Image (tube, rainbow, N blue to C red; front, side):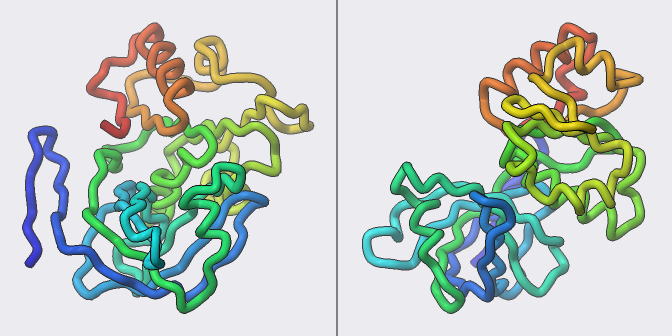
Length: 237
C-alpha cells in the first residue's frame, strides 16, 4: 500500500514498501561514475531532484542502504542512477562496480527537498550535480532549460559528469571551475564570494546548492553575504 505524507516544508514524500528491481544496463559515465538503468516498478512516483535509499540484493548487502538521486524523467519506463564510486572505501559503491545486467537492487522510500522552484543559479560540486541533472533534463523536456545558470565545481576536467550534455542544455550559462587543474576555457580555484559576484548578474533569483558539506556551507555563507535570503536558497535538508 502506498501512503503520501506532506511534510511541514511542503515536500511530498511517497512512503512505500521496498521494491526489488533488475539492472538493465550499467556503464561508466566518467572514470569513477556509473550510470545504472533499472526496471521501473508500476506506479512508481518521484519528482525531478528527489532520491531514494538503495541496497544491493546480495547476501551481506541488503541492509546496507545508501541515498542515490534519480537522474531520469518521472515519465520514463525505467529508472536511472548516476553514482560516484569510491573503490578504496570497500563499501556499497565499490560493490556496485561488480554488478552486471540482471543483478538486482532494492529501492526504498522516495524523499528529497530539492525541486525546481523557478529560474535561478544552480551551484554543484562533484556528484552534487545529480539532482540538477534530473531537473535540467525535465526542463529540457518542456523547453524551459534556458534561463538557468549552472556553476559546476570539480577537481579536474575528467571528473565532470555529463559535461557535453550540460553544455548542450545550457550553452554559455554553464561555468566549470576546477580546483586541482588548470585548463583553457575553465575557471580555476574554489567558488568564493568574489567568484559568485563575478558571474552572477542578479541575486533576486533562486539558488540551488548541492555538493560536499564543506562546499555547501561555504557557498551558503557567501550567498548570505551577497544578500540572498534563506527562502531563495534550495538545498537538501
